Length: 261
Image 1 (spheres, rainbow, N blue to C red):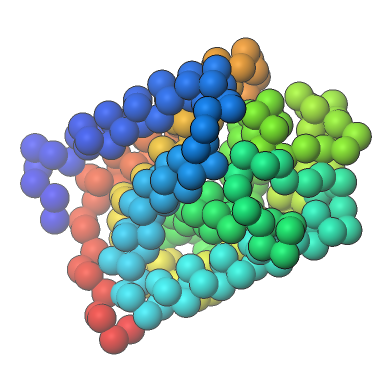
Image 2: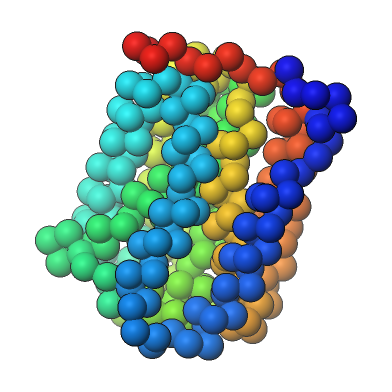
């Protein structure tokens, strides 16, 4: 159980990291062609992803967490690869060069570092409070809202390119239908593989940290790219997730999962 004096505190280190990533959005927007930017993408994505990965291991145990991470990562590669190759389910798009080398020339190798933590965070917001089906559905909707922040910023940075543009800051509405579909599948995978250790145990606050870090970065990108609605949406989502993290921190902490699980 957390110390009573700390139950309502937001970790200062996490707050500092969120602020750092928000400010770093300025440099990413203003200096997109800096040498070594693709290498920096791996470094930043790894730092953002680590809190969720570590928390998932502590929540589920090493074996079950590894299986969940592998399954969601493989699914991410598959759905994104199909999307780039066929246009289904997102629409006609391709990844740009700033994200570095691509698997089979289609999907950047760093995809699991950017996508999987979002799935973990959105599922963790609802896990343990609702039924598995409601958790999966709500997580998918929240993922769509997160992409409402992420996609306009990524398009402005040419992380990926939509062939025909679209009405929402150059993004077609089909993208969000695709995110809803893929989000349902990814959330279902994580919830199924997490089992009762995810749905019936108190959720570790750290499962939300990578989502907070990612939203902070894309809030910075939105602000410094003058993307008004995505910036407002990012701020609202940050407030929502921060509030939920504080509530989780006030709840009893689950015991570490067995190492052989």
